[in-house]
Image 1 (spheres, one colour):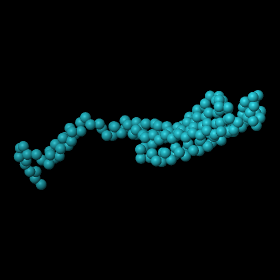
Image 2 (cartoon, one colour):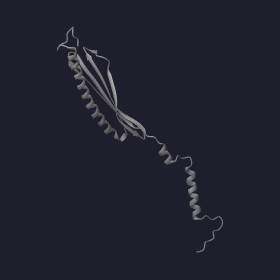
Image 3 (spheres, rainbow, N blue to C red):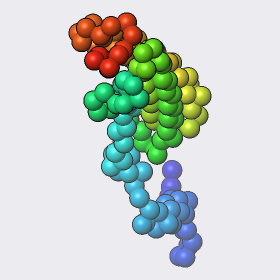
Image 4 (cartoon, helix red, strand yellow):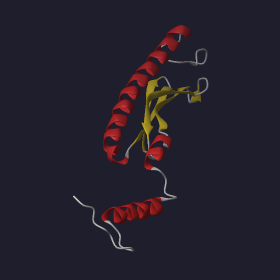
Amino acid sequence: MRARAVPKGTQTTADVIEAGREKVRQSMEGLPDAEADADDQQAREMVSTITVRRHFKCRGKAVGEPEEDSEDLDVMFFFVDPAEVSLRAGRTISMGQFESVSVSVSVTVPCYREEMDEAAEFAQEKVRARLLEELDEGAKWIVERRQRLGAPSKPDEDHPF
């Protein structure tokens, strides 16, 4: 097979392809490298938490300082800014003899926007379960306190608690 002579000034197919590649390279200059960008992207660490606040009262006066505890439920990682679902519920129960226990529980759950309904259900289940548990513990605390102080069934001037 014999090579054909190409007249001067005429581009071959290979020349046209190479010229197109060069134009693409020039147009992409200054744009971030997709592979390098993916490697540089850091996941944001977000923590879902539960916070419990307890408050005990006797004869309308606080017994001690309100207590507050927080604990981490889960650690999640997000590559975009997440949405956040927060839910709080509280309850005060009268224990008779002018005693009461107040508890509030809040849960914060970061999530993707499309997962907000599931996150809200998760938060609701956690708040409900923890609130019932904490109210039960608070009621036990008041009963134990009454027994420890030798409080009569009805308070009087000598035994206000």
